[in-house]
Amino acid sequence: MSANGWLQIAFYFIVLVLLTRPLGGFLFRVFEGQRTLLSPVLGPVERGFYRLAGVDAKQDQSWISYTGALLAFNACGFLLLYLILRLQNFLPLNPQDLAGVSPHLAFNTAVSFVTNTNWQSYGGETTLSYFSQIIGLTTQNFVSAATGIGVALALTRGLARRKASGIGNFWVDLTRAVLYVLLPLALLSALLLVALGVPQNFSAYTEATTLEGAKQIIAQGPVASQLAIKQLGSNGGGFFNVNSAHPFENPSALTNFIESLFLILIAAALTNTFGRMVKDERQGWALFGAMALLLAAGTAAIYAAESSPNPAIAPMGVEGPNLEGKETRFGVSQSAIWAAATTAASNGSVNTMHDSLNPLSGLVTMVNMQLGESIFGGVGAGLYGMLVYALLSVFIAGLMVGRTPEYLGKKIEAREMKFVMLAILCIPTVLLGFTAYASVSPTMLGGLNNAGPHGFSEILYAFTSAAGNNGSAFAGLTANAPLWNTLLGITMLVGRFAMIVPLLAVAGSLAAKNVIPPSPGTFPTNNGLFVGLLIAIVLIVGGLTFFPALALGPIVEHLAMLAGQTF
Image (tube, rainbow, N blue to C red; front, side, top):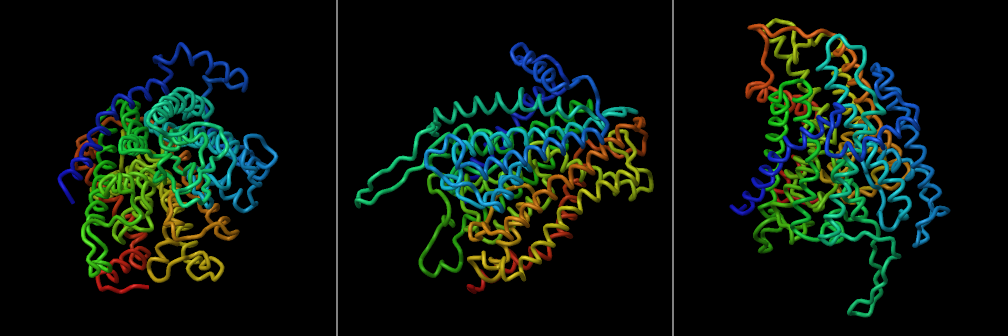
């Protein structure tokens, strides 16, 4: 560890805080239908979309209608992407003549990108054509992120409205999220990345001759456009197999900082948008504070763990930080920021190989994902993930003092808590269930490259990543097999939609309620006490749920490492 490393981490958080409020204000104006700088140009385009689709932008939808539209749209997106992947050998923009994707991999990949997970059981540059990348995957990068934003807005409206029957219009939320937010930001970001050295072309791969006289194929393509939205939309994935460790995706320390900031940017700004929509910005800052403190703790833990060498190789004279699997041009601090941010933000892109992290660092990355996308999480998903814990926190606080719990003036009763618990329990149910099965299945164990606790960690990480819609992986697992792809695909679907549906039901239930004026017994939810309680509830729920599994994986591996034991 060094002062320079800590300063880099501090600078990252300072910039994030400074950008949260202005971007949050812009998002608020966009989704409230207010005029922005983009309105003169994009307003007619937006209205044109509504006319073509037959959408009445002024019509509110009930939570059932909103949910139905969301599920139907995503089902169509899955089918379209599946067909593109299966038929890519017949489609244009395939200069390498890549074959169609196998059925099980096409299923896994289509589910992955529709659910904003972007888990990749394949090498992008060796499996997918330019058409599949830009028309199939990049399209879903936009609309899956917009779906998450829509759910967050719907839940926020449920808390902000009084005796309302509707929670917004999914088609309007989707259109505005893509048209006013994601497209402009992605366009500007892509141009910036091109200027900083990221390729953007449709050329065939380049064949180079090395100094030894060998032939090497250098992949390229429309990298910057996909990279921009994968970071901004918390999609993750990568054009290249090694993701943002590749010099074409991440050429310099400057692009590394910018891309790591994009991981969190919109998710952080949405907390401020939430505060503005409920007419109390301090509520948004309370959620932001809880998220930022958890992220800072995770980043610090990874930086501390990676600043020391693995004790197993220390007798060989190796000193200094653990640089295995890292790009030396970024160093330990920037690798720690990215590893913490990408797993907290449910992004999944990597600039260092998580399989090479020390056990305690691997534990932090898994915990970040296991906390239900509550530490900033995916775009939109982080806000509604933390609101789940906020509702649970006020319910527990109400039980402690013997009064009906309230949040933002809305009584939180049995109906809402049943849906909240359903949203919380769906992820560990599928995650731990499939992890247990994979740990004893000879077919699935064949995909492991490591034995002992690290092998178990690879399995646990894979299903944690899928259930948390993250998409990153311990690189030691070979998951491109029918059973792995199928079970991971199911896990991604449950992790996304089994959480969204009950939360939209909560939004509808809360929207129909009136606001109760605060009383002397009302528990304030915009101060440090609430932030502390919220963090405690997040950690307690996560700890009670996942600690036994973590004890069998990274914790045992850490103790074995200290004892010099290898597997």
